[in-house]
Image (cartoon, rainbow, N blue to C red; front, top):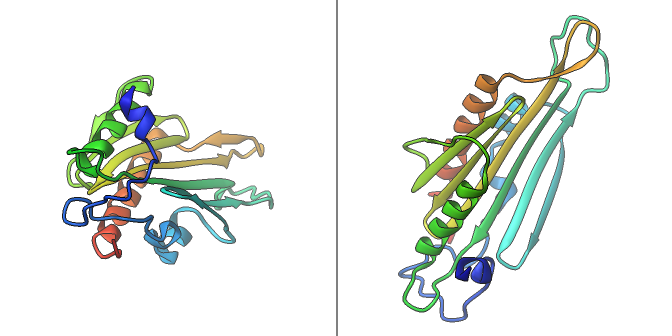
Length: 185
């Protein structure tokens, strides 16, 4: 219950030696234009939003031109949600971010898969047409969602495969956490 109370709260006594990030990074800048082009598509609509220590950037591509050969994606969405956690009492923001990750992981139905080499810890959850990564990196909590639909020959939308969703989400998560390494804190 305490973690719910402190989620997104700011602390004027943030210790930069403990908490690397004192503000949100440029969330939309964490994914390269080339990656957006490759995995979301063009043209793309970008919807950034942030308030205090929480922010989101969403990239959306809808192809409204029916392609009988099914050579272009019909719909792709990438959403990156970030929360900056700052120290609370003697608990560093990184510990609070891990509590946030655990709470979110516990709330997801089904099985989560731990993925090494992404941030300080990453869990992936996949459904037909969508994959989510719940990540901690320093004192940040990140939730990345990648989803998509294509069209079959009859023009009916069908979800992308679980394998495609999972592989793309893992690749995006690696790029995002790598770019956090060079982001100003």
